[in-house]
Image 1 (cartoon, rainbow, N blue to C red):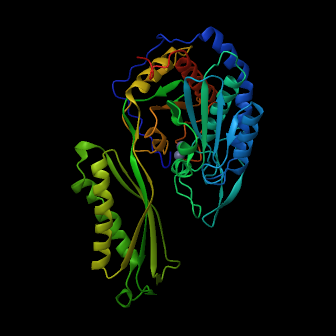
Image 2 (cartoon, rainbow, N blue to C red; image 1 turned 30 degrees about the horizontal axis):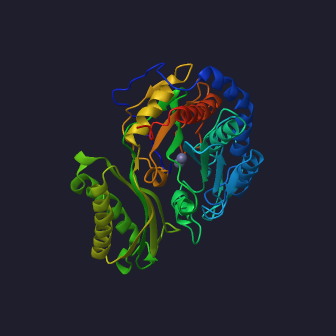
Image 3 (tube, rainbow, N blue to C red; image 1 turned 90 degrees about the vertical axis):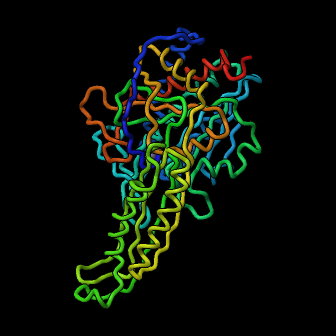
Length: 439
Ligand SMILES: [Zn+2]
Ligand SMILES: [Zn+2]
């Protein structure tokens, strides 16, 4: 969930307690409880050993070793070298899928917690802390614990695929696609291996309370693309701009004027649109106008037509503004990720199952679509699936809630358990009542 500024908009939020489920929670709950110490061990280990996109080598090894120990058929050739797929076949049907992402971010963790990441590394030439500031450690641990649960349970008589993907945040590795999910598909994941009939995906949210589950029945997150703009002018003395071609003043015009693509061109009644410039680099000294400025950012659109329009118009406007300033502009788009849709039937059943979890959690099954993205959409486009959010703020209130991608991002231990429990309940509910294949 790259640059997920989560707009926590709940529309007609329905907080509901118990509803019917087909699984026997009296039987399942003790099995879940027995695995929780392992779950916490997995989470703490992965949290303290974060690895950025396409560098999840040790995390992948950790996952592979566990899956093999539990009797899974393990595949590691999908996802550019750090993706892991585990399949367990204990019966023909149903065939259920769980997806988790494994990558961390170049963010210094500043939360005062016993499992705080102290790892440092170099990202794009800059020394930085590395941490699981988007909670993918929780996703991986919850999926691993679910894998352990079903492998060791004689009552689990179906088949299951676990997809541990690399580079959800957008990897930058020569020869690989930016999206780890797309790379897994490109490497032939579903050409070689059968697709599960249903898929569950989740994301933890630092700004939402522990005990909260949120989803909707259709569009959940935005179409996205990253962009880079390189502006080239002529360097010169800061005292004499007339002998230069100044890319800095051109950059300033571009940043402000291109917002009209959103405010004047996109049809905002069809969905939110965003253009964000998140990085700008150029120049070294107060009195030197540089020859080059590089800007990076992202666009988000909830509507497909707006997305096409913004992609075309942003480039055209940047080139036009550069041209009238006598500056050369190169605009490059990368890491395209399609919008994420939930299958309405799977979403309806996911909401039913989440509402059945005891003690009762806060389940909002009609949250507004957000302008974040998640490349789980690549899998959702191929398999009936549901993606849901899991709140993770500290229930004691001692640790201030921190947003995803910030140094203060924090997910409570209880939310880690809630993530695992949700996966486990969804798997066993579908096992007992495979609603997509019923007449
Ligand atoms: Zn993220
Ligand atoms: Zn994420």
